[in-house]
Image: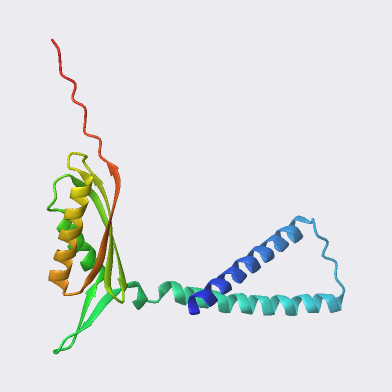
Length: 179
């Protein structure tokens, strides 16, 4: 809820600063006349002070958001053991997936994405293959290796592993030299 409120405040802040900037540019350039009587001038000054105070408070809020340390940016999987709590970062699980795929020849540019669901981990792998090994057997072996490796090392159940083959690498064409 706080993120939605902050996004709404940022939207209002951006629109306000943009409108004020446009008004000041138009007033300074002489496009808008600004001849006011004393009462109108007092009302404009009060409105300007109120708007400046609100924009200043919003600026402080956005400054705080930009410098605070966000604990939610470090996702992890939490487990309770008989001795205490264990937290395994998502980065660790991703690296375990990459380590499991590194044992396969012909698999390159591997990227892993992990989601935690009630039934365990959902692992999505994106890879580029060399085209030498049949893709169905390669992906089945990759799925099994990643599933077993992550589950064995972390102790966290893996519900499924999805493998997306993004492309096939082009092997360099060597032209034979004829003399």
